[in-house]
Every structure is written in structure tokens, then in C-alpha cells.
Length: 87
Image (cartoon, rainbow, N blue to C red; front, side, top):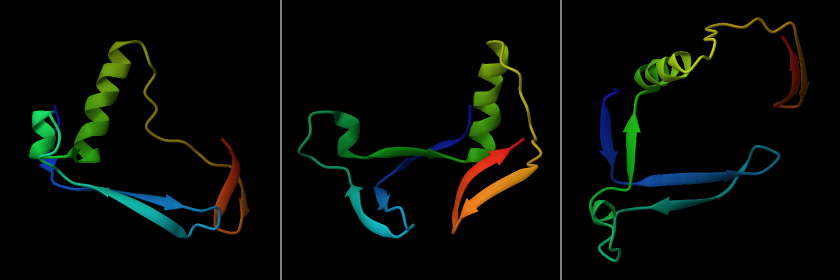
């Protein structure tokens, strides 16, 4: 199981089609809720380097094929945005 730690704030960004942040919302723990954990923490965080292999193990055990690399042979872009790729 990956190491996890409680987060005291969560910020979600809204990005428009031009890639510009158009706004965000922020959540913090609050005493105004009845769900006890939400009074002291709002999110759980873990490192992707620990989480991804941990989660992949469950998928492989369930029959999935684990692929750890891919080769991109063609990439279509429009400005900063990738529209399509072939593998």
C-alpha cells in the first residue's frame, strides 16, 4: 500500500480550450459538516511512484496485461494541444 498523508486543502483549476486558467475552487476542512473526517482533512495524497505500481498489481492479478512503455510514431498537434497520435 502506498504511503498516504492527509491534505488540509484541495484546489481544482478550470482550464479553457486555450490552456488558460479560467478559475478555480478551493476546499478546506470545516466544522459545518457531520462527516467527521471532513472536519480535520479534505483529501488524501500519495506519491504516483508508489501508487501506480500498487494499483497495477491489482489490475494484473485480475487479468490485465501490464505495458510499461509505448512508441509514438506520429503526433498531430494544434498549437499546444495534442489532437491525435498513432502507436
